[in-house]
Amino acid sequence: MNNFNYYAPTKVVFGKDTEKETGRLVKEQGASSVLVHFGGKSAIASGLIDRVCQSLKEEGIAYETLGGVVPNPRLSKVREGIALCREKKIDFILAVGGGSVIDSAKAIGYGVANEGDVWDFYAKKRMPTACLPIGAVLTIAAAGSEMSNSSVITNEDGGLKRGCNTDLCRCRFAVMNPELTYTLPDYQTQCGCTDIMMHTMERYFNMSENMELTDGISEALIKTVMKHSKILKEHPDCYESRAEVMWASSLSHNDLTGCGTDGGDWACHQLEHEIGGMFDVAHGAGLAAVWGSWARYVYKARPERFAKFARNIFNIQETDDEKAAVAGIEAMENYYQSVGMPTSLCELGIHATEEQIKEMADKCSFY
Image 1: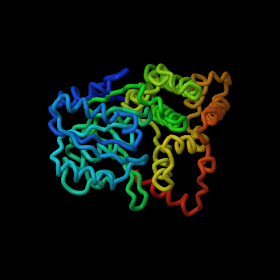
Image 2: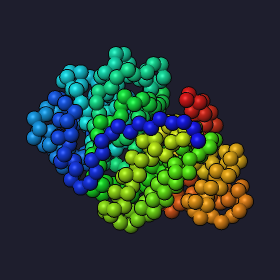
Image 3: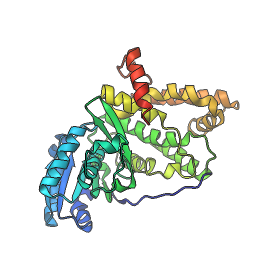
Image 4: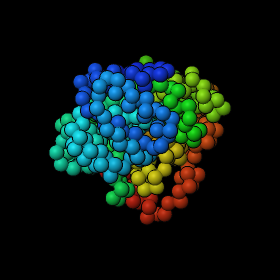
């Protein structure tokens, strides 16, 4: 195993009606003026924004609202949020939504707390030295941004999707009520489950020695999400399954499943970022579409690792490591298809030209 540091400072408040505690949690942070950042009309129509804002009022906390965040969150919205925060002297950002909203909030936090163009941090020209404090009320279980150090933003100029990872942006608290995910369409639910598993799998498939405990946590997480994603196809309002998936989302990307490893292989995420930036597809679907091709390309570098995955996740009994590895890859693709996820770019509706493929490869190498 490798030496490691593990840092997970986010306070989690989990369960039914927990969004009503938001005002108290913000007050604990010493905030006086809050930006409530959210996505589309559903957050308003469901009454969630009203409930959150009411909890702020009850604690005597002033607030401004900024909606309109879209999947693959845009730099233009981030810049709008930075300007609003500076004008209104905002000192805390509350993200009400999923990973896209939280990532956008983090980027706004960077932009307000540092001079210059916020895109510099995502273009790797410089690193931020501060970030406004962030809190989250989670409505989609997927990206794990509520407990991660990651923020990913899309620059409309060039379709560039880039990330900035620092501990400065970690949420001070995350409110997680599984009931808030009941109304998600099945496609979004399954995209989220795919993203959760991929955050774990990209750490799992590595070239280092591994800890038995870390592997066990990873394998249990993947199997749990697979089980409950199928339940949610038939029973979208199953609280237990929503809760299992929501907690898995956080554990998959708070670095717990990377303890003691070399960090893993993040090629699928890098590839999908370029696909998402160019074609604006759902992140989880893009990951499912490229995973099988990636796995077949790399498994011979460490067939015993892929064989372990096959045996422990899918109970494949094949004793030959290479044959077991291939069977595990096929089983994973069969799972994706069973929950309506694509297993190729064509199934995703993308018929990339040779020029577009070369462009994606070139952008992917940015990392």
